[in-house]
Length: 239
View 1 (cartoon, one colour):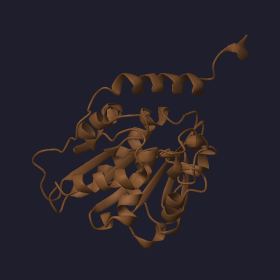
View 2 (tube, helix red, strand yellow):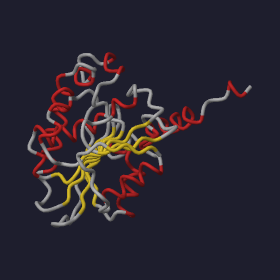
View 3 (cartoon, one colour):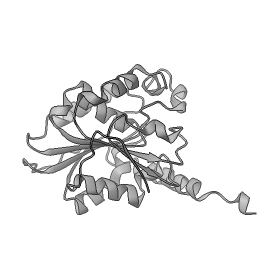
């Protein structure tokens, strides 16, 4: 009888996916905070494939209330490639004043976009740190489902991903990779490890549930609030 019951991780992931569906109709336009000044912590939230900025609502609230951060976000259309989305991110950043502490937090595809902006579009001069949440830096098996769309950037032999990995050490912008040990989109979950920076792995969490897990949100809030930045050395913590 027990074997017929869903595993805890599966149930949590299902609930998280449904939560994404409910939140996706929200926040369909670009959101740039008002009153930004030098020294402010400003977080840009970058969503993944088939999502919108709305999926970040719980995390956004935590960052605003607990880290005192100002939040910027934008929604990109399904199927757009990494470079195209990164160029939209670059245009968004030009609307922000110099001297802010700019943090890029990306889920899945969004984490790739964050690093592409830093490494290929001059973002290293503006960005304080990048944080990826279950981002397939070494590819994902579901890429073949979208061969003529963004899938060309997400397969295991993608030139875009190879470039991101090869040039990871050319910039000193700190990076934190968050991994979900029950991830069924990025398999194995270690494919979500960027070649540099710190890694935090979460037990019993999947690709989408990592967005809403209280522990992962705590880690992100602490980083933005001024906690110890991620160094270029490799450290792995499991929570």
